[in-house]
Image (tube, rainbow, N blue to C red; front, side):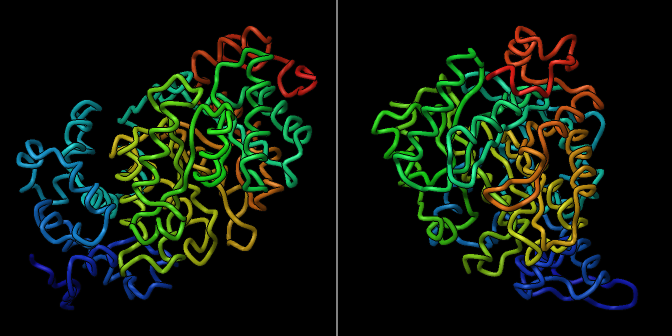
Length: 453
């Protein structure tokens, strides 16, 4: 590999592929914290130039984390279609980028190319793209999935209803859920983050959401986002779970810090297919987020964009119904300000979609980050333009349990109305039946949770 270039009168020599990949990243405080970021814009430009001229074979032949020592790397390797890889392995990263952006390259061709790529190749292409490039390429890709209903169609913007409560109080949770439904939010999932990580609490929340779905004949799916082991205990006790959930990292060691490995995920996959209440075939919900591996001291000197891309190969193994990056949740140590959060959200959406995942984004930030709600509005619009499958709806955009800021129910309704997006078709038919929506627009009844009380 050629790892040296001259730029603006200075010669830049990079140590190895890991060094080039890290320094080619747009500025991220997490890479700076890890001590692997470019020193300045000149070094970043030089790294991008070197990376652009490397071939896809160069990237595959120089693994950042060898498959012999990491099970995520093994999954990435096993997922490569060798016939397609043989056709494209001599492409440079620049040629991959150009192919994805070319006007003539459509969804079916991108889908085929993606089967010959590794997660590291996908991350490399993202590093050479502007924000608009990331949006343009992602907007071509359509990834549809079905649990009890189908989401991901062109023109559809689904919403996760996230009716969290600081004590898992059922009535409090329902109050928030009814408001979400009244705004037409909840087609992606009725998904609750529990305070109490116990099988009994998970069971109670799953029973409560399923009762609401049954009583009002709501075409959607439910999920409680406890640790996967807790959900498995609840399901074995008869809890009605349509999907099973877990957070993922991009390294085996990072996943061990989450208390999971591939063997456990395989066991959970078998359980939800046997005893879950979802129709399927897509019965998983995964969450990711740049920086989690650094938090767990499990990053191996690999940059956070590349590690995030590796999460998506692990998620893809289980054919999930939905995946989202919780883009600004970890904090300013990894994404310092709104500029970095916006960039990360667009990168993650692109990298997930290119790996054929049903990508959503939790457009969010923490209160000690240099960002505000206007920044989240901006990112929401950009992602909607790029064809994001779903975003998150939280009462008043303020999660009183997880203590972070996201997007509200009425924010999603506004995005749909302003940008010509619709709920999932089955869910929209239910909204029409309830009098909440008509001809793709909310009626005067919308926003009134007493409809369900």
